[in-house]
Length: 210
Ligand SMILES: [Zn+2]
View (cartoon, helix red, strand yellow):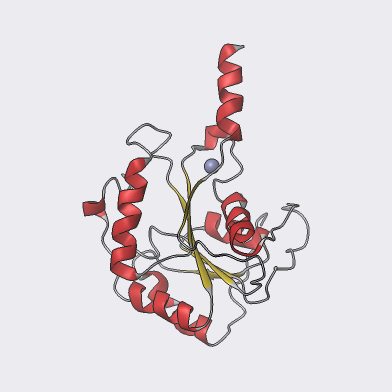
């Protein structure tokens, strides 16, 4: 019983949110670029990125982020980091890692981190769209309230919304908010898709239940 109550508490915790822009006015209604981190901006690792020195930026990531800014996107990082709930390191470490990330490739509007494992049954671990919805809520006061993996792909809040990631779980989370989907090779990262985004490509086909 006691354990059950602790689990419930944990499940109600949301993602870790780092918000850089202090003047979101609630009027802005433009497009958001939702961007996964490992394998997109920096090289991933099967053992997690555990501290800033393990963060190695993939060539072209900085230029791609600059391009997205120039195109008018607001940018939301959305990253699963279950090392946190696995107890490998404290939540503060994510701020150090993201501080280095932003020094090297530029500032994000919002950075969302899911610290949970599958067994925590949270609403933010991708492919669930909790981080994308919360970022959208913070940036433009709107998000998707419903989720139906077996239904039609939802209408995006802005037609140019997009999700960039290397895994199917990223594509699933982007699908769930109606975003255009750009799946990248984990060794090439965002640089491999930025030209398609500049050309307003419709993105990749994806079915979350195929
Ligand atoms: Zn989570």
